Image 1 (spheres, protein in one colour):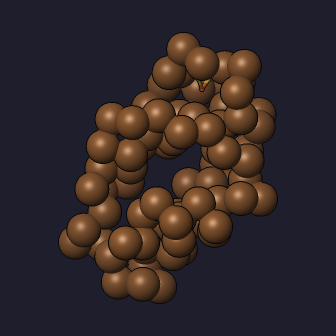
Image 2: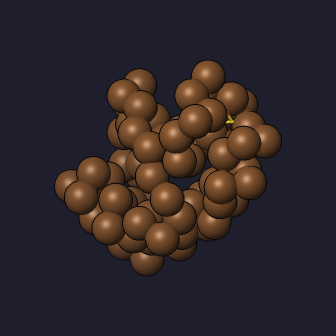
Length: 77
Ligand code: FES
C-alpha cells in the first residue's frame, strides 16, 4: 500500500508534518513497515481542503487530529 502525504505549503500549514509523524509512529508500532510505503508529495492541486493524503492514488482529506482514526480505518487493514 502506498501512502502519500501532501507536503506542499498549504497542507504543511494545516499540519501535514504532524500527520506524517503520526503515520510513521503507527507504522513502526504496528510493524507495518513491509506493507506500507509512506512518502511525501508536493501540492496535489486541492489546497482548499484539509491535508491531502493519497492511498494507492485515491485522494483523501484529513485534519491532523483525525490522523490516528484515519490510519486505523484506511491503512491498518
Ligand atoms: S499544498 Fe497540499 S494540495 Fe496544495
